[in-house]
Amino acid sequence: MRSGSLVEFWMRFESAIDQQRHTQKKHDNDNRQSSPKLVTQLPIEIHGSRVYTHELFEDFQQEVISSTSGLSARGFSEKDGVEITTLKDGLRGKFFDIHFNPGNYQVNCTCMMFERAGLLCRHIISIFSSNGVSSIPDCYLANRWCKDAVGTTHENADLIDGRQIEMTKLWSEVYEAVGLMRDRC
Image 1 (cartoon, rainbow, N blue to C red):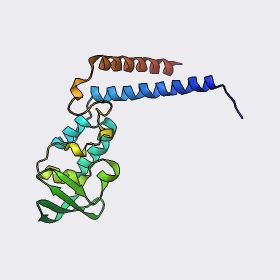
Image 2: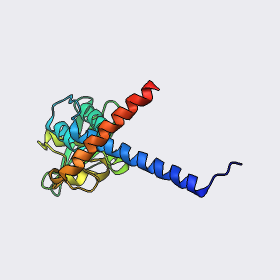
Image 3: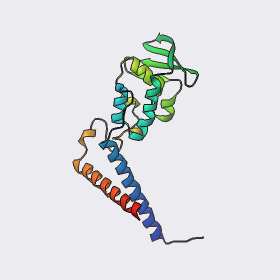
Image 4: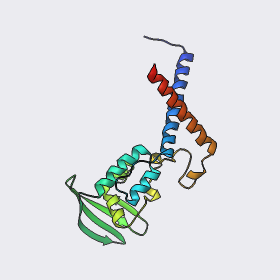
């Protein structure tokens, strides 16, 4: 059984936490300083590229791409101002009902992807696109997936302290230099 001092444990713990914080800052900087490559040029994809982190945007983009093909409407009805569309998902070979309220953009799908993962499914994206919804409504932007999730809101994302941005850029450069040195050793 290995034993170590409490001081040694604490120093390793602090080092690990510092590394995690710096890695997070680097990811935050990367998300703010670059834009992912767009495939469809649909307005909802463009909006997703602006608000989602790069990692989540890749998943969202796949749903956007899938929303443009392989789906076919099999039924439509309306009840109390809510449009109910049945889509056949050719990729999955299943039918899904999407309930959409055009008055307030409330929507849900029987695939329940948003409820499970916090990400809009191809079925909802298809309904949004066909109804001219060009951006993801705020109620469907899970904070944990957004670029500005740490300490900001969508309304004040542009008001981030300039010094914090500069420090993030500097840390990014430090990490690149350390990575280059590590590769050489």
